[in-house]
Image (cartoon, rainbow, N blue to C red; front, top):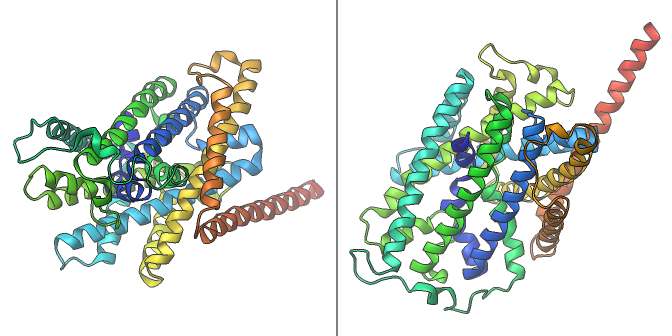
Length: 448
């Protein structure tokens, strides 16, 4: 369970996208990752409280439905499902491009399709195979990050067997100061940061299929949150102490980790990190396919998705839901090549902004359900949110503030418009479904 949570969150977002955050904020990227990590810790605690009390494969959607009503559950479920599928498509294309960079003879689109097909097949076999696959993939990533942190610390202290040493803490204030782009850039960067962190919540989805849901989710959420914070903030700190922030690659292709490792004098650093990032990509694709299929299956069981998606195989795998998500991911992969990178970048940024919206719904759901459980069934509160209700409200305020910062930034209109269209389209679909359901029930009553 712990490795599943880590596997979902340690992705190309850490190994590659951290370069963009550093370029946009300077050394203040540490604050962005620390603040984002704090938000994730609090959101995970809120999710943990709800999941320990009411384990559900529907996670976000089921809690929003119970706390805020069927409309909110419908919106959150479909938005999360869309986000997960976009993540599958994005990571698949990223993995194919990495393999292409190692050997120009490897075609990108067919390779992305092959990765998707292999992981879909693995997920179709059984829940156990998914868990074992994710355990080993996540373990490989954790080993690499721990080794990187250790080697980086030795280099900064002057104990690494190579020429020179890191600039030390002075690197955090050189080249324009600690926040050369201003503190507003830190809030704007939260979208990219939270997109990178997003995935730890898969623990609460997987808990519903574990032997002891309440015990497992309580233990796993506590372990995941502090490890994620150390891995992300620690890794970014090491990078900044080794490489001047204005020399960190931010092109979305080259890894800041590879640049830092090269400074350590490690031969073949770029090739090494390419393979590590590929492992991260496959791991996140695996976790996102799992999460998307479980959420869609739970929604179908509630009548919020096509009934076929509720079918579960003898192995416990929701086959139709899994295959449906894979088909959409395949379509998005093809669109990335047909429409160009700009269209796909818009889709990714839209998914990142949806993260803020989904986290707001998690906090609002927890606030409502906590009050209800305290009054009706306090024995279910095996895991409690800290500082309730104030910390939950602080999370909502921070997320709203970050959304406002992004919405008011230059060039944000297309992304905000896409989010509005996604939310508006989902709500229209809910109204259409509700009216059809009411009409069907009226016909049934008349026949009786």
